[in-house]
Length: 182
Image 1 (cartoon, one colour):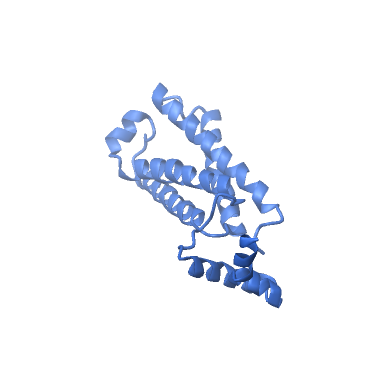
Image 2 (cartoon, one colour):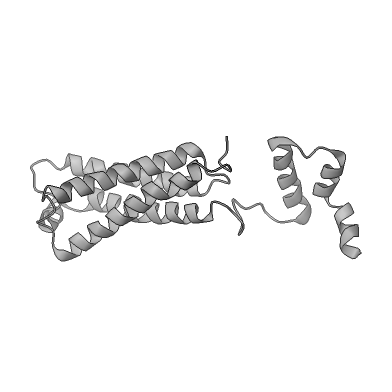
């Protein structure tokens, strides 16, 4: 009986009884009022978040493919890249540009993973960017362009290829689902 008395004074329950609990704006007010009255800060997500696994994939992909590979291509010296078999030409700017774009992708994925509701466009951008990186790696493998890599480099690129495949396919489930924000 005691929990029913607390329910009557809850601001969310009060809004429900008054009929103000309809639409997106009202749900935002309930979330804000609930966080204010209970003295807790509102989090971007909780344990019952439908996007939890997508957020984990976005963070892992942003760190490994975005920052890991991107900063490796952007910062590593020309001699080291040539020794690893990644670079073999005269100009290095295409490798640096690819690294900077991958680092930007990593930042985008990490920021999008912090949103309360992961938007459809960010999921499509994640899926498309990872699919394109996976296609580039697959084409390089099929054309024997990765034959000069040492076994550690080959294992690293296989891991990156798998992360790109997961990052390309995993968001598609959420894009088609009903709970994607319209």
